[in-house]
Length: 302
Image (cartoon, rainbow, N blue to C red; front, side, top):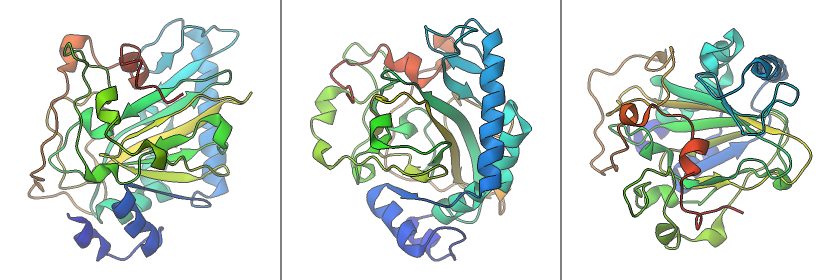
């Protein structure tokens, strides 16, 4: 569906102004959209999985661990595919307001794509360099939306997810270095063409939701506080969006229709998307952190 077609459907959670802002700028944020009972349940499930990470010595299918991770002091950078790790995360994907917010932005027929929880730790935390999500997992159209919410809130010093407004209207950049090595990062020469002075990093209290279009250039800075900043990130698409290429982070819920009906025909957007790597030849997809460790140092958020 096109944005014009989507906006003709009644809003479920967001205001019409918020929906229009999303299509205009490539992102929108809002507070108070997640009920407290969901916040409490998701935080408790997250705590359970962090506790379980004490038994792990290296990254695997469930956790992306920082080098300094120990059983005494867990340092989880990412909880992978949380819908397959705890029933609360799966219920949240299907039954919470998240799915209805997705319908407000992709249309009434909604498909689940992927999910994770990123943890930005104190003492600097994990910088995420500038990138565009769709370059990791191309689709037949650009409806995919990443919905995130801050489990404990986020202030400026914690390195909020930061976007370049309206960058979704521009080019998609190959996330490779000059030697053709995948870095998961927009090259510095391409970032130099974008208006970095317009970068926005929405903050807010616990439960603040951020919706991000799959083409929008974004990243996040260091966490300069003494508190971990977790953010849950779920990706939804319109039912008429179909992935091409390998799914780098598939879950048991990926491809399931969670609102409305399945599409009989794909919506084909004519704008091209760069081809991502063959993940099978790279030993599988680890996380953006492992990809960007090899990236262009000139493309640092700070």
